Amino acid sequence: MANILGTGVSGLNTAQANLLTTSHNITNVDTPGYSRQQVIQSTNIPQSTGAGFIGNGSTVTTVKRLHNQFLTTQLTQVQSQSSQLDTHYAQIKQIDNILADPVAGLSPSLQDFFNGVNDVASNPASVPSRQAMISNAESLVTRLNSLDNQLSSMRDSVNTEVSTTVNEINSLTEQIAKLNHNIMLAEGAAAGQPANDLYDQRDELVNQLSKFINTDVIKQRDGSYNVFIGSGQAVVVGTDVMPLKAVISPENPQEMTIGINIGSKTIILPEDQIQGGSLGGVLNFRSESLNEAQNSLGRIAISLAQTFNDQHRLGMDLNGNLGEDFFTVPEPRVTSSALNAPTSNITVDISDVSNLTTSDYRFSFDGTNYTLTRLSDNSSVSTATAPSAGSPLIMDGVRISGATINANERFLIQPTIDGAKNITTNISDTSKIAAAAPIRTEASLTNSGNATISQGSINPLPLDPNLQQPVTITFHTPYDGQFDVSGTGTGLPATNLTYTNGSDISFNGWTIQIEGQPGAGDIFTIDPNNNGTADNRNALQLAGLQTQSTMANGTASYQEAYGQMVSLIGNKTRELEVTSEVQANLVTQTKRSIEALSGVNLNEEAANLLRYQQAFQAASKVIEISNSLFDSILRIG
Image 1 (cartoon, rainbow, N blue to C red):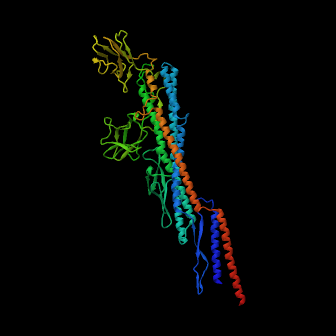
Image 2 (cartoon, one colour):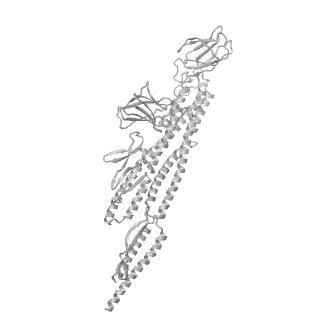
C-alpha cells in the first residue's frame, strides 16, 4: 500500500509542478525577454522484486528555460548594429533636409548674391544696384550663419545624447552586476538549480544594453556574466562595475567623449573603438557626417570670402580708392590639448584657400619631429626643425609658421569649421564697392600705326604700391621694333625693349598687351582711372567668380562644391536608409527565431493545462484507490 501511495503522491507532485510551470508561462506571455519554461522529470529508482522491477513513480529533476544562447548572442549583435544605423540615419537625415532644401539651402542665396554682382556689372554707377548687391551679400552671410547654427545645434544635441546614453548604460550595467550577485546567491541556496527568471531578466538587460553600444558577454562558471563593450572594454566583471563617464574631450572642448572610471582615474576611450548601438551611431554621425558637413560649408564660406576679397581689392571704388575686403575671412580654429603646457602655442593661417579640404588636422611634436597630420586619412608631413615664418610647415593650404611646443604635445587644427559661423560682410557703404579697374589705358590720337592697347589687367595680390603711377610707352623714331617705358616704379624707366605683337607687358602690378603694327613715335599710356564711375571691369571679374573653379585645387566652383556636399550627404543618407532597413529586417527575423523556440504559445499552454490537470486527477485517483485498499485490509483484520 505504501508503494502505491508513494507512487500516487509522486505523480501528484509532478503534475502539480507542471501545472505551476504552465501557469507561470501563461502569466508571463507578455513579459519582455521571458523564455518559456519546461519541467524536466524522470522516474524514481524502481523497487526490485522476484518478479522484476516495480516502478516507484516520478520525480522533478529541474525546471529549464527553452533558450538558445547562439540566437541570443546573434540578437545582441544585430540589434546593436541596427540601433547604430538607425541613429546615424535619423541624424544625417536632418542635415540632408537642411542642405537640400531648395528654399532654405545655400544655393538660392548664393545665386541671389551673384545676381546682385551682375547687376552692378551692368549698372556700375547705380546706387540701387550697389545697395542690392550689399543686401544680397548680407542675406548670403545670414544664410551661412543660420545653416552653421543649425549644425552647431545638432552638435550640442549629440553631446547631450552622449551624456544621456552613458547614464543609461551605467544603469544597465549596475543592474546586470546585481543580477549576477542574485543569481549566485539563488543557485547556491538551490543546490545549483538554474535561476531561470533571473537569467531572463539579465539577458533582457544585456539586450537593452546592446541597443546603446556593442555588447559582448562571457559566461563564467559561477553563472555570472562578464560584459564587454565597444572593442573589448570590460564594464561588468562578476559583481564589479566599471562605469562609463561622459567627459569633455581633451583634444576638442566642443565635444563630449567617453571615459571609463577605473579606480580613481578616468581613462579616455578612443572613439573609433566605441562601436554599435545608439552611442556608436551618434559618434559616427558626428565624426563622419556632421564634421564633414560643417567643414564643407565653412570651406565654401572661406573660399568665397577670400577669393572675392582678392578680386575686390584689385578694383577701385567710387571714391577713387582701391577696394577693401568685402567679407571678413574667418580664421582657422586652433585648440591646444588639455594636456599641453599653458605656454605652448602655434601660429596657423590659410596660405591657399583653393587647396583647402574638409578635414581637420593635428599638429604634434614627438621630441624629434614636428608633424602635421590630415585626420581624414592620417597622411602627414614632418620637419625636424620648428616651423617658422621663413620655413613654414604647409599641408592642403594650412600653414604653420610658428610653434612653441613641448615633446608629446599636440594641437587640433580645424581650418574651416568656423567658416560659415564667422563670415561677415565688411562693407555697408555702396560707394566702397570696387566695380572699376584702378587703371585705364589709352592710345595717343596722333599715333600713325594701327596698333591697339588692351584694357589691362591687375596682377594678383599683393598690389604694387606704384600701381596707379602714370606710365608711358613710346615707340622709337625711326621705328626699329623697340620701345621705351617711362614713369615711376620698379624697373622704370626701361629702354630699348623689343616689341612682340600681343605679348604681355608688365610693370607696377599691371599687365597690358599691344597688338598690331605701331608707327614711329606712337605713344600708349597707362594712367589712374580717375572718375571711372561707369567702369565695370572689376565688377565683371567679380561676377565671373561664380563659375570659376576656385575650390578643391581648381576643380570646383562655389556652387559645384556645395552641390558635391549635398550629393555626398544625400548619398550617405540613402545608403544608411537602405542598410538600416535591411538590418531591421534581420533583427525581426532573429526575434522570430527566438520566439519560435522560447516564446509562449497560449494555445499550447492551454492544452498542457488540460493534460496536466488530467495527470493530477489520475494521480489523485491512485491515492484514493490506495486509501480504499488500505481500508479494505483493515476491515479484514
